Length: 227
Image (tube, rainbow, N blue to C red; front, side, top):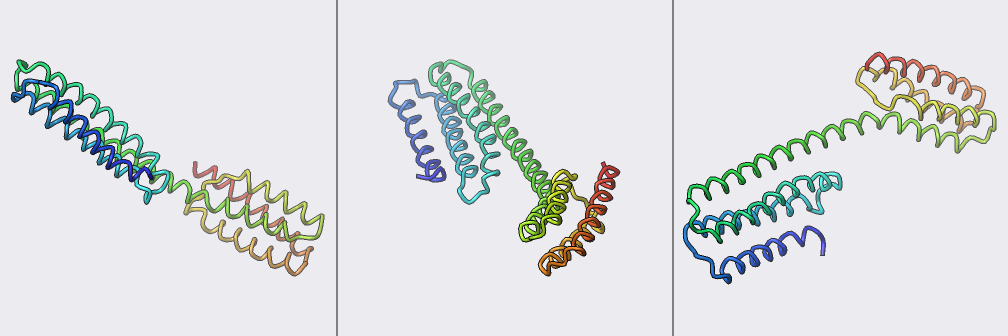
């Protein structure tokens, strides 16, 4: 059974076990009992809902990974609430206001912690997405040059293409809108280089490799200025 299928039955099982403990053991069922039972049952359902939402198979793997932090917050709240509920079951003489206050504070902390954690997760995912987008250009360029080198049958040009690939590999991976012009020029020269290699015009291809190398050096210098 997938994780998404486990959340619901485990929540039902937890609620049933909690009910068995609450109603089979002969606790005094006064107001404190019902306060503890109500907040305890809500905590179990809250954990189940968070687990269900955070482990959905439709979510990206990275989102599910961050979702475990949210499940952790809900889990700590649920365990703490279980302890408080059992105390309220066992000590009926406790002031009613004290039970309500403690349970309410735990609930507020859980909701606040969940909101803060989810907000942090959203921010991290957004930053990760932006970083991957900025790194795509240089990784894609390295792949393109590797493909051109694989098609090249001239040993000397192939060697220069491998050197160019190494330069790209160790170039600053972070792109920027301010680098759009020079990166577009590099990409155009790479496309042209691929055509030259296909036509086996190796002299022109070698000149294109050298030009791309100079443009990459210029790009990397501009990257340093942007930091």
